[in-house]
Length: 200
Image (tube, rainbow, N blue to C red; front, side, top):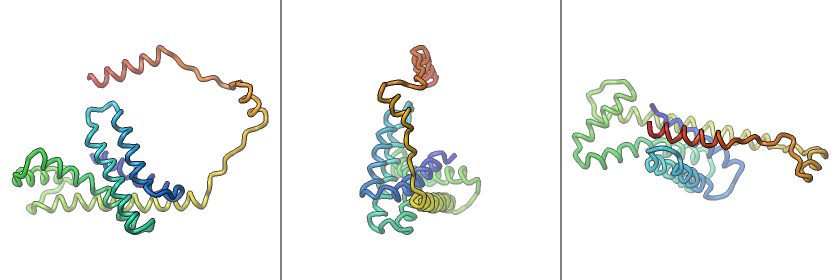
C-alpha cells in the first residue's frame, strides 16, 4: 500500500534538493516530462496513469515555486500539492469509472479510505479527510528533507578527483584495465525471462 506515494515522496526530495544545485527555470516540469516519457517504455501494463501522475506532480511543484519562489513556502506547498495529486487522481478515476452516481462514488471512496487507514466512521468524508492528512504530512516531510539535502549539497560541493598520468596515457592508447565482459547468451536469457514474467 502507498507504493506510489513513497515513490512520489522520493521524487519530491530529489527535485527539491537538485534545484539548489541547478537554478534553471522550468527544471521541475522538464524533469517530470523526462520521467513520464521514461515510464512509457517500462515493461508494465499500467503506464498512462503513472505517466499522468508523474507529469502532473512535477507541474504542481513548478507552479508553486514559480508563484512563491524558491522558498520554504514554495517548496512545501509544492510538495503538498504533488503528494495530494495521488488522492485527487484516485477520485478522478472513480468519477470516470462510475460517472456522477455519487452514492457509488462515496461508497467506494469510503471503502478505499477505511481499507488504507483501517478505521470505521459514520461520517462519509472523514476517512478521505484523514487519508488526505497522510498525504499532506508526507508532502511536508518530503519537502523539508529535500530542502535540507539541497542546502547540505550546496555547502559541500563535489570535488572531482583527477586521473593519474598513467591512466591518461592508457586511455589515449585505448588500453583498458578491465575490459567489460558481455555475453550474448545472457542477453537473450534476460529477454526471455522478461517476456516470460510479463506473460505469467
